[in-house]
Amino acid sequence: MQQHLSDRINNLPISATLAMAAKARELKTEGKDIISLSLGEPDFNTPDFIKDAAKQAIDDNYNSYTPVNGYLELREAICRKFKRDNQLNYTPNQIVVSTGAKQAIANIAMVLLNPGDEVLLPAPYWVSYSAIATLAEATYKEIPSTIETDFKITPAQLEAAITPKTKLIFFNSPNNPSGTVYTESEYRALAKVLEAYPNIYILSDEIYEHINYGEPTFSFAAIENMYDRTITVNGVAKAFAMTGWRIGYMGAPEWIAKACTKMQGQITSGANCIAQRATITALDAPVSKIQFMVDEFYKRRDFVLDMIKNIEGFKANVPKGAFYVFPDVSYYFGKTIKGATINNASDLSMLLLEKANVATVTGDAFGAPDCIRISYAASTENLKEAFKRIGNLLNS
Figure (cartoon, rainbow, N blue to C red):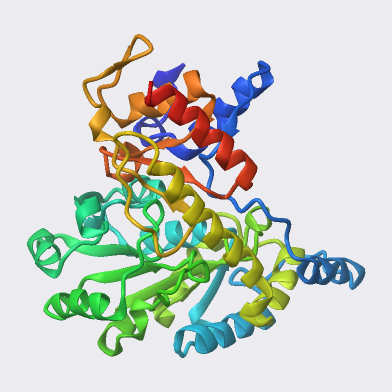
């Protein structure tokens, strides 16, 4: 009955990360020993001090519908967090709490984009950016980068990509999938280009903000003449190991925040009440309380980079944040391994799943067709075994 579905859903791609995770789960149910390095999900438990706050909220009988844009106490906590960590001054009326950062991004696209508007996506980019732009009936244009440039675009590339239809640009630092972190000077150079285009808005996705390794995260909205054109998106999923709690948020010009609240009011209304109360505690806590997770990710990053050196044909940059490596695997294109011809990264990713029992994600989904994404949000034991399997398959 495909013909009875809307063009909107028929033209919408399936999330590559979720599709690979589903395939891995399917193979596991068949009895295969799959090591999944495909999902961007911390393998830690939510810290006890956050869980305790959730239990207290239950005991305090928080069980009613929440305000569409979030509890005032949470929006005030978000303002304190923005001031403390990012030197950004927002008021509660500029904050909208959503069911995950993905909903915040979708709200922004829906309230800013008209059919035919253009979205710029510095590549590689998170898989849902292009799909969300498509849902908003906009078009998107990729600005490519390579491992040689540490997966960063230049001001000249940005200038060349802008057209009269350009309305929105997505920045994501630390980046998913590459782990790249833009420095303050690099962001300021890109902002210099955007000064000449006052009708272009910037969505700065900072969900991996606290997972960085020596290169501090700089918020695009902290650039003085970009504040009124930038929407800063963040959440608690990654840094606080709260993926299933589904709390994201934005700081934005008040007129955009009001529009997003209006949109959200017709889609989901307010986010979960217990998760919101726990998030107040998470955001008010000193960042040092989650440093143990960041330290462990740092160790795993170095471990994985050492493992990659032993795999013929894999080229990787040194990620400065997040918990992914994004090796260039184009060395294998055109080769035949175990009877399978590798034409692209998707073929290699599927080969690793079927012959090595290791789940990764093709770079095609991220606008970087020469690469695959490998998550190191997994135990060192699993990482060691996964790379042993990959090496045994490819090095032979």
